Image 1 (cartoon, rainbow, N blue to C red):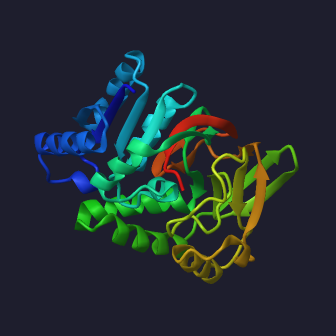
Image 2 (image 1 turned 60 degrees about the vertical axis):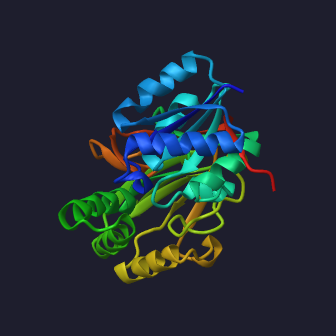
Length: 299
């Protein structure tokens, strides 16, 4: 099978390493795993270009290593094609790789991916942009922006910066007035956040969450009505420690395959698979059932 491995040279676990040394190690490990693959260790700005060339060159399997942003870029190009997508866990949290059961050690991950089977999973969409894990409005995008400020100013790790940024955001949460319209209902809510998951999660979104399924064909929409900052802080702590959603009574949950979000604001900031975007409302969320072929290890 014609295979390529693309690595973001600036991914968290690759920082400080020579691209040439990275490529040599990956080639050796891939060969030992039985993967006859072309290796690309690239700057993020070249990712779309290289992926497009590989798609046009009829590669059948493309394994991508990087953080949330890198994987999201790949998903937006590979979804809907016949190409099989593989994931190497090179980011900070590696949520998707953990869910799939891919080892966090790169050498072991390549051994597992070489034997993994292709399965079709769902992807979410927001105003034409696909997402693999989740999209959110309110607290999450604001916390990401504060996190990056802390990292630039103080040099903190992403894990430390995101925890402090989250609590700072929760203490002074945004207030969003949103109109939600789905096939099931229409309602106006005032909330500090709206979370949209690609399929339903067993636990909250922050502490290495795991989804109930990857191909149920439904979006999970979570929000809370106007609540005190102390209640919101309690929810944030529960989220960090992965408390199951059904044990958080303040949360409302809708499952749907397609819905709209309207706002009087000129634009809304969204966190889409960990990256912040500005989008003009109305926001149209929908799910594409079994749109992406992914290497998933056998149980």
